[in-house]
Image 1 (tube, rainbow, N blue to C red):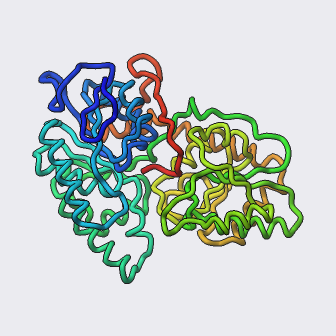
Image 2: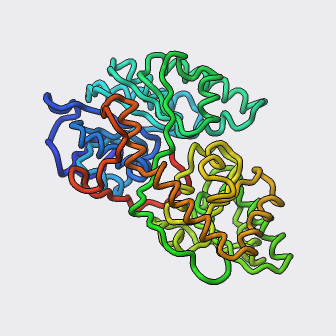
Image 3: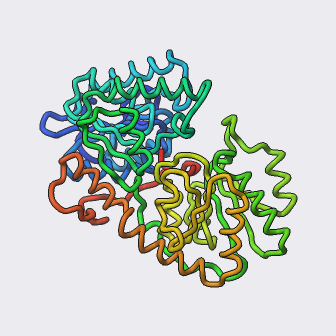
Length: 428
């Protein structure tokens, strides 16, 4: 087992000790993501499922921190760090990413490449095409910034045009693609991001470990709302603060907790705003945490008033798995994840009055949070359990044929190990 060092292959403690090109008698798959922490937070169960099906796994991503490297090592997953700026538009940086990916794929000679999120899909699948990888799969976890506005202008229009062209070039010969929600499906087809004849499979998000995110009773006392995510304006935090101000003005008794890191993104919430909201008694900022479970279990209702195209937010799935009702917006992938009026409430994005109305219902109707939370748990276990989701992915790739039963959480698969990294909302 080796330590995490840039540009160095890391081998896990289990499985064969092999070179990057793999053993001669085992199939090989390469998983490509944008950030190291996402490999374990969102894809560890998928990689373990590949192992259970007889594959050696190599994981490629930027910024593989020591805790992520250790978790991959413990699960016998080889990994390399790749230079990649997930949000930048510098073409020289992107060429560097493409070159590094091509070098790794030519060395590894995999049978399959699976790439998820925007830049890994474009440059990972293009590198796989140039490296003559037989099967290439794109996993669209959300179309994001370039497709948020229906009729973009200026820089956003240029970004969209470039994004469409890059996808068309990189995904010409892919085997199949997967997406999380109907809005993304429509835009993938409408803008021709993949060829018309390529299969596009619907997948209900990255899935959630329903045993780890276990249900607990809603705590007694005043209703406590919880937001989990980066402190970005586009996540709807300012709208949440405005809604809280309206309800506090009515004399209602409730709490709002914000769990998540500050962010250098230009869209960030300023320290001044955050301090003003705290001083007014509108919110409590809990900082960041590497374990969200106790915070979810300590809340009454989960709230994500995002403006963004979130794919299917993992944070919503985690809250539902813990038996918590959800308030979210009609942003693609958010509202359709819950059953409006059954397991949560859906409000128009950016509408503080509507958000306040949804929150008011939970404050004024005793038992509503518990009833909706039970329905949320039932839905997520039947649709979004991580083992069921990964079975659908394997079925769509033709690796597992037959029923879509979930792989047992014991036996051939080892227990998942989460890295100790600060959590962000939604799946990359």
